[in-house]
Image (cartoon, rainbow, N blue to C red; front, side, top):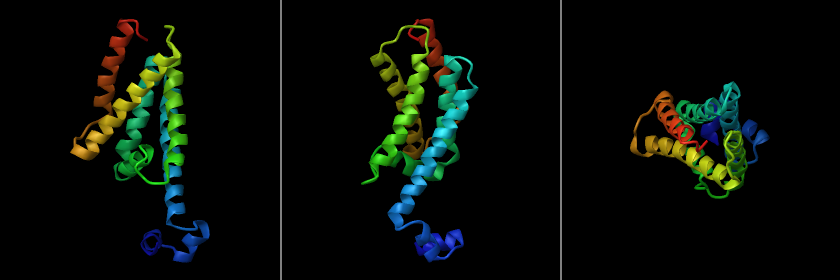
Length: 165
């Protein structure tokens, strides 16, 4: 806490005034970052005029958040994946909200997709995005949001041409 206070240029008692302990501070940071991730996704979705633009916007918001915050990306992903002991409830609520955003977009398609199909498309979509981020973090593979979005656009066009969405 002393190091945090020094970096924040405040006294240690000031930090304890707002946060009872390190875990409480960590939880506040995670909540703030996950809220920012959700805002990033929502902002990009809102620009889209159709399903394709919205789902690509989802990917851009999601990937753009993690690309711009590489330092905290591994902590956030560990939290989202449940690797940080005792903090799973925080991430679960945000992950549920983020997944709902993608589900709602896939549910908008003009093809009658079952609930299971919408769920599986959502898991595949978000799973791919997470693998791009994990690949970057673990294997030090660089990527650009535009490059990944281009690949996703090709995939979406395949699904649309084959009347899957």
